Image (cartoon, rainbow, N blue to C red):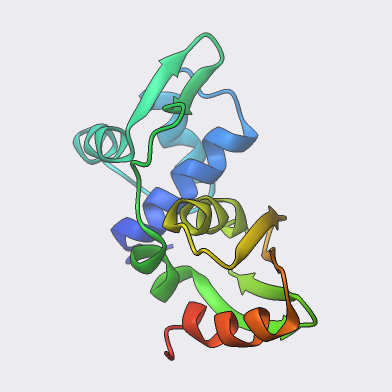
Length: 145
């Protein structure tokens, strides 16, 4: 996968540490390479710092309660494919493997109308209190309003 943006790489890193116990930078680099992302040790070290990752007994993890990492508005242009309202739910489609990282950024963005979110591999369900809120939120997430 040539030409991966920093936001896409960060999204991949967050998804990988969510799915795997990653204990070393070398292990993380190998997992990224399996996904077609070649990264130097210097870049990977900088990414780990930028994302605020910490080492735990189970490998790299995001800092508890931390809001570090790419913002929703940084990730969305590269990862968000569509957002459509369905009753009081907004269905957000992403590229495969990126729903978790985009969902985390969405949660941290603090949209007041969002009651909760659930992420799969390429889909996020964003629950709002009303259908009206979902209809208004969907175009905002797509960056149209």
